[in-house]
Length: 71
Image (cartoon, rainbow, N blue to C red; front, top):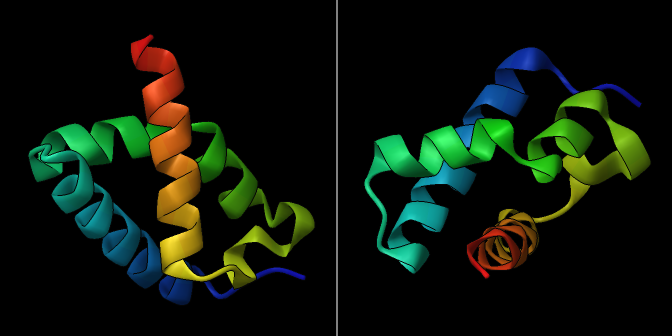
């Protein structure tokens, strides 16, 4: 199932904002990481209906990916 582009863009804003707060990043840093992430790839392609997952769930996935790259 494909999500509406406008709805996805709004979801991206919420995810990036929450991610920035949780990881104490600037919005620019959070946005840069998000658009390079595997999470973004899955959500934008509609894989496994990732776009249907809660914002909190996707932020936690993004944090795990971020932390793994920091190691």
